Length: 489
Image 1 (tube, one colour):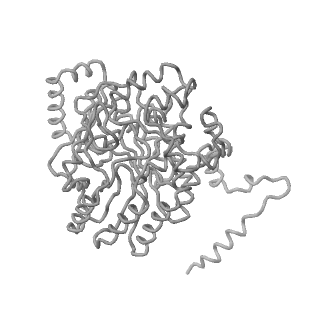
Image 2 (cartoon, helix red, strand yellow):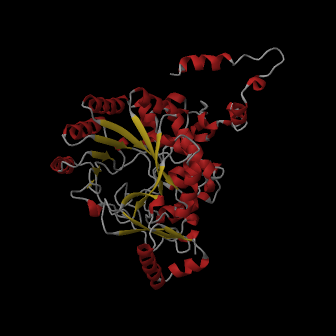
Image 3 (cartoon, one colour):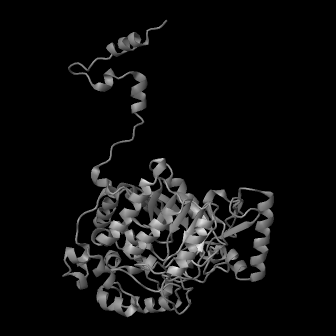
């Protein structure tokens, strides 16, 4: 019988500290030394910018905000009251800080956009107004006429067919055990790329919105449906934006859902943490309502989390860090769902920095979506191949549990699928074919790369409806005979 303890002591006794004039490496066993040669070289703390949140009063660089003190800027009521909703009001605020032609371009953009303009002082302060055309924050929130592109023939206002999967207004039941509840149709800020541009915000010149305003009778019908379906365990509270619910409304919705026996998990969806983090720091009633719901969930062995929406590292400041710190102290899980957008986060370094910065402030990078095929935002969309390449580089750049899943929310209501799970993808025509057997078995779903990302020949083909249908028919045939292949044509 081998005495392993004695053997280990003997091996340890052979290791000695380096004598005078001897280096540690000279005393290191050969195999260990060889492995040390492959260790990455150290980096300086200064180079790790993802963890830097300097407490600068960055808003003061704009003349209109030069006299706004910290207490005022951190007041969510001031942020809400001073949000801008028209080109004229924004121009009056920014003045000569932006190029003269910019506001003419803005007027043209708003006349064609599916979403109305609403932008908070916080985001206004973070936009680079000296170069607004290329600023990743401006691109997300402020439409510019000369940057808009013609829609792909297969774009739609309700591209995900949420209304088609709605058993009662404002409730979408697509997945077996999950439903999406839309109690409100307003947001603290309006994103250009909103997947719900069919209902969110005010009417625009292009879109008359479906009304999903606060309506207690509508809510009651949604609750009754959820209770009548024992398979529904996961409910997302979205909108619009849950940030815009009053504290009493948020608490009522949360506690009502948690009281339904079959509901195990609720998620509060809000862009607010990215565009108005001041609410967490200064709206004590709303924060307490959120905390009450979270505590009640845990007490009953259920779960509540926030799903938020940071898309670029620049959106995170020391104010964000403080707000997320408050939520972390209260045991509230926060997950992020980013949307890949052209000119915003469609480069490897930007996406890796976004993931690391989120992780640093205790936000779990959950999803990265390819941009939905919503009308009026073709300039924001990227190709599926771009997403595939970026995902390849993000994976391995940080811990696996902090690596987001890159997904395509399938047009037509197929739900979220890993971008890699296509049955067929042709980079020349830009057609990807997916299936969703657990959502809608036997049906094919299609995602189309933006026209601007295709070759000139393919662009011409898409300009002809007959050719477009021919390409689609070919993709269907190929998807049935060559599952999970890429045709680089």
